[in-house]
Image (cartoon, rainbow, N blue to C red; front, side, top):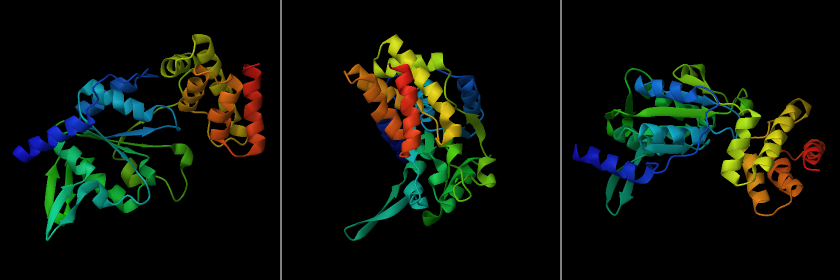
Length: 275
């Protein structure tokens, strides 16, 4: 028990969010997440880049009063990176828990960002945590961890990046309740941009209009629409004195694509708004 309390203290110290993150709901995602948490249901967040998936998890962690562990998935992520490994110290070896094991012990919300980037054999590791068992086997130690009360597994991915090689296996995705987080409506997006960047209300409305219009270019060569995050970046530049057109060029146009024809199309939208 003493060891378990140490893990709780460690995670609370490192991962507890002390101040309420700014988040404006687009729909009923807050209510659905709270019910999922109360019923020990794992949650899959689907949505384009820059639509606030990470911010939403941070907000829910604060709202529910739970510590948060965030893990950025990548193709080299191994099971040992999540669960833990033995480390050599002098003539002895010492076991060190990985972030997933620490979250399970501490009853934290564990957020695996861009889960499709992880190796398939690593993804399978989380399966026992997503059903009624709520356990994490640690084969190297011959040990099975039972999830502490309050533990919840949350994963995210961007459906726009799906391919035959990078997609969630059905055996994985059907273990989660799925929430779709999309681009917010223009009036809501303007409020978000204004709060996060510090621009005027008039400028935030113009930037939200840019996002709305630029997303219509998805059918004309643009692989993915403008995320709210990029609009905030442009707003921050504008708030510090950079001319709107130049700010949008470096924060939006060039960040979105390298295709010169598509860049010109985005710039035309920018120029029509910021004359």
